Image (cartoon, rainbow, N blue to C red; front, side):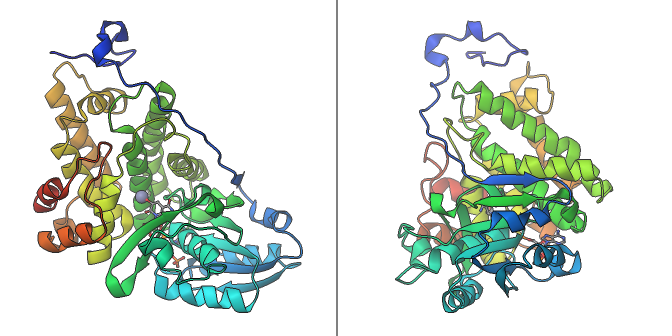
Length: 406
Ligand code: NZQ
Ligand code: ZN
């Protein structure tokens, strides 16, 4: 075969020659200050987490939190606080909407933000948090990568298991006028706390449950399917999260009010992007970078875009990702890897089938769309997304191949 990989218990790592052993785990400093309050009937605990004297702005989306009673619980919990509300933050939250909340926050001298929603509301609220004290044009925090130096503290009530935004410091904000979907992050944007009550996700439509499963799955793969990094703790945790998503996702879709499935999905999605599994290992994130352009151009949901990009991206780079693809095939899909190429083919096919089975199409055609390759490439170039992946070698040439295959 010419190489062997560390696949205990499927193989013995003692046979790997030293020059083929994984690179050592990278140094890291890990600090995640977000307090997680998890479980049924936990929304009332908000009251004790927000300083009594705070002037609070509660932010939410297009109405689901009103309809399913979450906002009612939040208002009840905040009845001893001074609070204001800003609703209407849309999926793929836009600068155009958020800047109105920034104005309200400044006028009302808001000093605490409470996001009630999914990744879009939480991300939007992180932008509001950084923009309120920012002296310049807030869009520069994204477009010009001006560093955040101050932020209003925020807390979250999570209503959708997907992004991990409830326990990380990143946010993805769009500008509708220019079709930009850009990422920014800063430690000051870590939520101070997040309330995770899985029962509030019973009301999710299947499309959003499926999106959440796929988004979390791809978050794990972006930090796992790279090259061996002598990090069995991270690898085993990543594989545990993937298996949990595979096992629990279909249960939540079959029975939306299955508390155990919802609880495990919620915690898996949080763990997928709260920093734990990504310490000390290489990261990819090219599926996200290309996916953001599809969302910005075609209005696809975030996870829908990931499901379209992931498979052609992995196929194109299968040689560079060979060891981890085989590990993924063996440990996640329980495939016999004695015929390696077949095992990788099957692992990719099983991934595609899994996404389709949770209701997320894996082709543009599945959405009745076709990809305009030149427009997609121009977006990537404009956003400086031209040296992507764990080795920075996914250039516009490879991106063209991926877009052409969609
Ligand atoms: O707007 P409402 O009416 O609240 O409805 C929402 C929205 O239409 C609905 N929903 C949320 N909770 C519900 C519910 N419906 C019924 N019952 C509930 N309990 O779901 C729809 C989608 O919500 P959204 O917040 O957009 O979904 P998601 O959590 O998937 O967030 C996607 C956004 O997060 C970004 C994406 O790019 C996208 O903008 N991401 C953020 C990341 C981060 N900060 O770390 C990482 C991710 O990779 C991702 O890029
Ligand atoms: Zn994502």
